[in-house]
Length: 80
Image 1 (cartoon, rainbow, N blue to C red):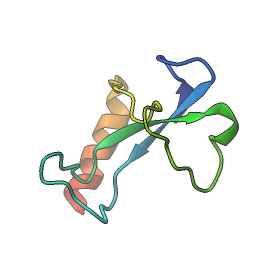
Image 2: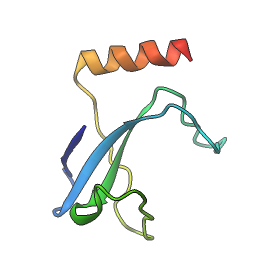
Image 3: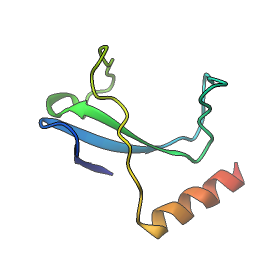
Image 4: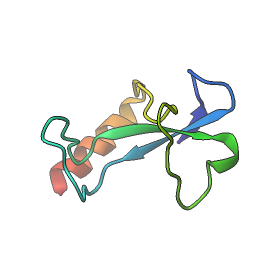
């Protein structure tokens, strides 16, 4: 899912579901099945890789209000 950033003009937010974590921060663990909204500059949104700069908008607080998306994510997390 993609959408215009609600915080910064010229950025696009892509929503990802966490399927696997390669590193974990004990102070801020991200569980499998969590949804993350990441912000990219419009011209970089479809690039294969992107590295955020210090102070740049990266993660955007977003509430997923589509119950179908929430249920699908919860079901996949339980299966894994």
